[in-house]
Image 1 (cartoon, rainbow, N blue to C red):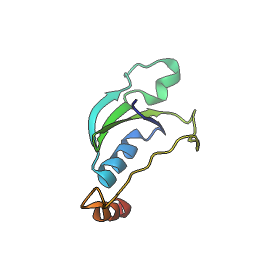
Image 2 (cartoon, rainbow, N blue to C red; image 1 turned 60 degrees about the horizontal axis):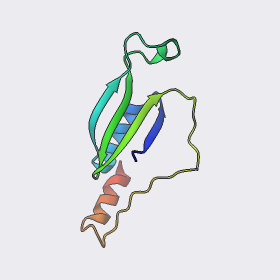
Image 3 (tube, rainbow, N blue to C red; image 1 turned 90 degrees about the vertical axis):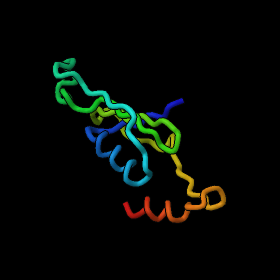
Length: 98
C-alpha cells in the first residue's frame, strides 16, 4: 500500500519539507502535459505526482487543486524512538527546526 497525499498546487513545496525535515528523497516526478484536459488547464506543465522514499517507505504526493480537503480520518506518525534509533532525539530536534 502506498499512501498518497493530496496537495493544492504545492506538491513541490510539500516534498521539499519532507526532504529537509526527514531526509526523504524524491524517486520519481511526473508532470502534467502542456496540453492537458480542460479541467486541468491551470496545471499545464506543473508537477502531477512525486514519489518520495521516506526511511524505506514510498509516499506519493498528488499535485492538483482544492477539490479535496484533509480529514482526520487518517494520520501519519513519525517515530523518533531512542530505544531503536541511537540518534532519535537529535533527529527529532533537526526535524522540529525545519
